[in-house]
Length: 261
Ligand code: ADP
Image (cartoon, rainbow, N blue to C red; front, side):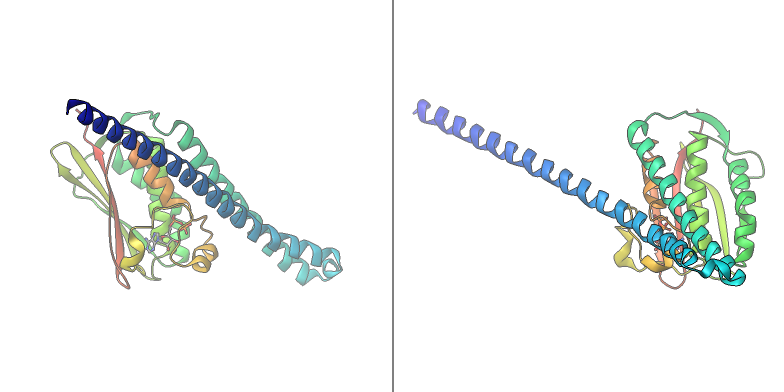
C-alpha cells in the first residue's frame, strides 16, 4: 500500500515537474513574442517619420528645391520628421537605460514643490501656445521634502505635465497638487480638464506604444513611450501610480513618494 502511495506521490511530482517545464517554455515563448512585438513596434515608429523625411528630400532633389516657397515648406516638414525620430530615439534610450539599471536609484531628500515649479517653467511656452494654464495647488507654503531620485522624478513630472498639455482642451488648465497620502507618504497629482480617457483604455495605457488615438498622439509629437517610462520609474521607487479619468472631462494621474524619515 505504501508503495502505491509513493508511486502516486512520485507521479504527482513528475506531473508537477512536467507542468513546471511546460510553464517555463510557455513563458519563454511569451517573452520571445513580446520581444518580437517590441521590435516590430520600434521599426514601425522609426519607419513612419523616416519615410516622410525621405519623401520630402526626394521631392526637393527632383526639382522642388528651385521654388523658394516650396523649399522652405518641405524643409520644415522634413525637420518635423527628424524631430519625431529624435523624440522616439531619446525615449527608447531612456527605456533601455531604465531596464539595465532601473532599480539603481540615486535617492536624496529634495523639495518636490521646487521640482514641479522647474517643470512648469520648462513648459510654460508650450502650454501658452495651446492656451493652457499651468497651476499649482499649493496646500503647503513651505518646502515639501520627499525622498526619491530627483532626476527620475523630474522625468515623471515632465511626461505627465506634457501629456496634460498635449491632451488638454484649449483654454483648459493643468493643476499639480501635492498632498499628504498617509503617515509615510505624499501624493503628487497632475489634474487636467482635457479630453479624458474611455474606461476600456485605462488598463493598457501604461504599455509601451499603447495610444488611444495613433494619429492624434503622433501629431502631438508623442513617442507612445511616455507613460511606460513613468511606470518604470515609479515602480523602481516601489511607489504607487493612480489614474482616474472621465471621458470628455479630464484625467488625474498621481503617484506617491516617501516622506523623509
Ligand atoms: P504618447 O507619446 O502617445 O503621449 P504616452 O505613453 O505618454 O504616449 O501616453 C499614452 C496614451 O495615453 C496617449 O497616446 C493618450 O492617448 C493617452 N493619454 C496620456 N495622458 C493623457 C491625458 N492627460 N489625457 C488624455 N489622454 C492621455
